[in-house]
Image 1 (tube, rainbow, N blue to C red):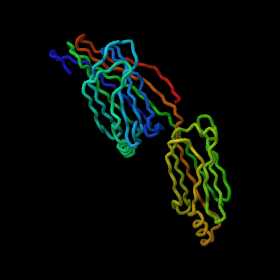
Image 2: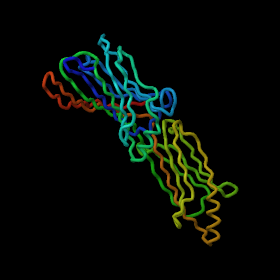
Image 3: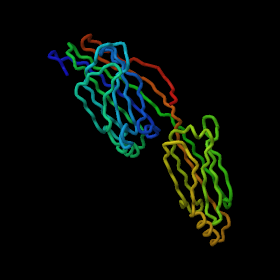
Length: 313
C-alpha cells in the first residue's frame, strides 16, 4: 500500500529449485529456502516453505511465507504474492491482502498449484527447474521508494548411473553389479535368469546402502542388436526406499524361438540400464541482492553471499 507521499518498501524474494522433480518429500514434508533478510522491514528474516507434495493432498504443491523468530518486537504488516515459474514459463499466482506477521508466523496457500502442471512443462522443455517468486510490500506509510530483489538457490543433488551389457549367447544366469560413481559402493545387483518355461526373469536386489535412496527413477531396455528391435522396456519412479523388484520378460522366449527357426543359435541382445537417484542431500546458496533506494539516491548494486551449506535430511 503506497502512502500519500507515493513511497513504498518492496522486496521480491526469488528462490530457484533445481532438479525439482526429484524432490523425495511426502505429504507434509517441506523444502525450506535460504534465509532472506529485509533490512528496510526492521531487519526481519524470512523463508519460503514449499511442500512438493502438499500439506493436504499429494496432487498439489503448497507454499508459505514464514517470518523467522527474530529480535524485532514489531509486527510486520505486508501484502505478499507468489508467482511460480517453471521451465515452461509463469504458471499460477496467489495474492493475499495485508497480513500482520508476528515473529514465527507463516501464511500461504495449501492448494497453490497442481504438480502435473510443472512436470508436464518441464518434461516438454527438457528442464527441471522451479522458481518461486514472492513479492512483499510493506503496509505502512513511507516517504521514499525502496525496491530490492534477493536471489537464492537450492539444488537437489542427484546422481546418475548408466550401464550397458551386450550378450552374444543365451542368457541363463547373469549378475550385474550397480555401483555408485562417487564412492563405488554397490547399490544393487541386477540378476537375469531363465525360469522353467525359458522366460527371462530380471531381478533387482538392493544392497544395504540402497536404503539411503530417497527418490529414484529407473529405466531398463532390451534390444535385438541384429534387427534393432525393442524386445522389452520398463521404467518406474520410486518415491520411497528401493525394495526388491522382479520382472518377467516372456518376449525373450519368443525371441529365442525365432532365432532357432532362423538357424541362428547365437542371440545378440543389448541391455541398457539407467538409474537416477537422490539421497536427501541439498545444496543451498544465497546468491545476491539487488536494491535501489530513492531516498538515499544510491544503487547498492550486487552483494555476493557465499554461505554454501550441504544438508542431509
